[in-house]
Structures are given as structure tokens and as C-alpha cells.
Image (cartoon, rainbow, N blue to C red; front, side):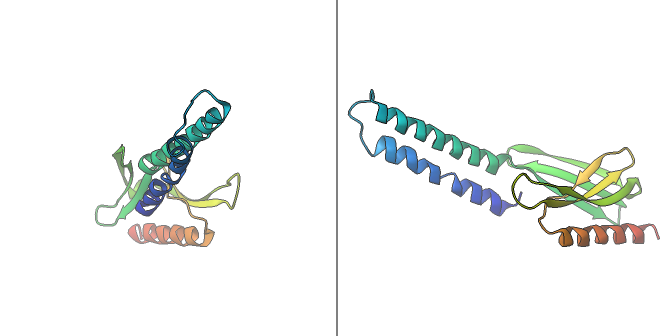
Length: 152
């Protein structure tokens, strides 16, 4: 997840908080024991839950990075998030068995594409998603060309 997306999600989490303010604080309820208050409280609870979810997505969304290093003949795969410790795996380029394009069909909307790198032990490393198959195919071809030049 890019930093800009994290900032956007955090900013969007502020908008649902308008409902509790408008429905519970600004009105200055005289009595809490009426059906209108309970409706307002229910709407406010849902809005606050949405805000919490958006903040959680902003701070817990994973970012991954794949780096190919010609000098050391390795590739590294790392994942991290603001609230999750960085993990990294470094493998020799000779362990790469296959590169391919992975497709993930979304319930709503267009499918997303990823570069998938399979290593000898069967582990599959995936790049971040993209809606452009052409872009992902270009990246996969560059990886294949890089691997071919290393072992040429």
C-alpha cells in the first residue's frame, strides 16, 4: 500500500465522524429514553465503526517490495506496515523457477493482475496489484530479461 493511499484512508475516516457529532452532540438531547435517540445512537455507532475500520486499513495495510540485485545474485521480498514489523526474505536468483502473471477476479469491478515469482521450494511471491495487464506483463518481461542476462 502506498503512503498516499494510507493518507487518503486516514482522511476518509474523519467523514463518518460527522454523524455522531450531528446526531448526538450537536442536538443536546434532553432525554435519552426515546426511540429517536436510539436510532441516532445506532447510526452513530455504525459511523464510528466505519471510521475505526478505515483507520485500521490505513495503519495495517501491508506493503510489499521485490528487489533483484545483480551484484549479489539475489532477490529479496519484504513486507511491512506501520503497525507490523518488517519481514524480509533473501533468496539466490538461481532459486527462481518461474515468473508469471497472476489474475485475481474481484467480486465487483475489474480483475487485478500481479507478477508471481515461484521458487524451488514452491513458495510464490507476488507483486502488488495493478488493474493494467499490460503494465504487469511489461514488468514480468523485464524480470525475465534480467534473469536471462544474469545466467547468460
